[in-house]
Amino acid sequence: MNKENHKKILVLNGPNLNLLGTREPETYGHNTIDQLEALSVEAAAKHGLTVDFRQTNSEGILVDWIQEGRNGYAAIILNAAAYTHTSVAIHDAIAAITTPVIEVHLSNVFAREEYRHHSYVSDVAKGVICGFGTHGYVLAIDSVASMLRNQS
Ligand code: DQA
Image 1: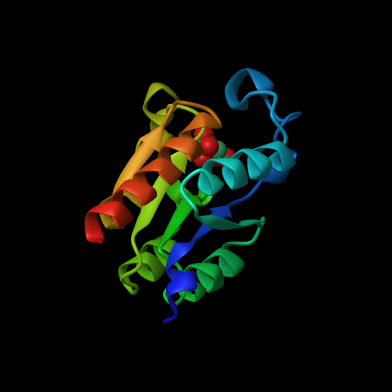
Image 2: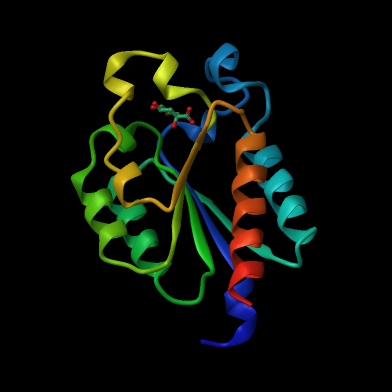
């Protein structure tokens, strides 16, 4: 793996996150997905890192992208959205790779409906950040930078 690839973070967003900004803004805030991408790019740049930022409504595509993340990425930041609470396939994809995965949610899922309290991602994730809105992505990127510093 070349050194440059070590500095890339794969940021994956699941279903309905394309609607950020207009979707239940009292829960998910007013930032659009494009603004969230810009925030992530800026946060990564502060650490000399780059992000590959993606969104899909499809579970299978998320699985494909997680598998893609096994090579060439320092870490994956994953907001699997509703699939967090349903997808054994996403759990298995994360378990199958060694690239660290940080689980992120905009909302505090534990303060919401009970069906959001269980995550198929958390037990295979390096860490979990939830409840801080879009700033959670910045916290996740800062955590990746800190992990990389500790490795070198
Ligand atoms: C979410 C929380 C999930 O429960 C929900 O299905 C989402 C978004 C969040 O970012 O807060 O779509 O992952």
